[in-house]
Amino acid sequence: MPLAPRGGHSPVLVTLDRTTPFASAEEAWFWTMSALVARRDGARVSAGKGLVPRPCEPDDVVKCLDRLYRQRRIELAHARIMRIWGERGTAPNPRHTSERGDARLWREAMNRLEWPLRVKGIITAAPAIPAGSPASTAEIIPFPRAR
Image: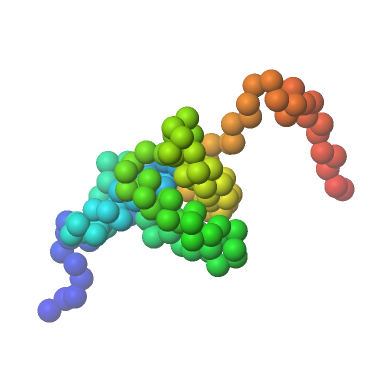
């Protein structure tokens, strides 16, 4: 009796060329939290079953967060705020007095999570440069090639 899977029973994995990376660390985190909440509620999360193919699994984003924690780049308070607001599916609003402290921790955590996700190819969008800042009017000087 052959042990090969029958047609239609093996997972169809997508190459990285056909995946859609996230636009920001916030978007990746909200996607991760929705998958983790669904898993906690009993859903079976598996690769290649979503509407949009992504370049990672939810656990990959959590591993990046864990690494930042182990490197002491974020604290437990950051992770707690990320969990609370990630489950809500929205970022804290700094305009509300009661959410001001959470918004500061949220922004710090997202800024620190962005680089590891960018390096892994999970997010691709370049960081936004605010209009009128010195960086938006700076001249770009080409770097000479080494020969």
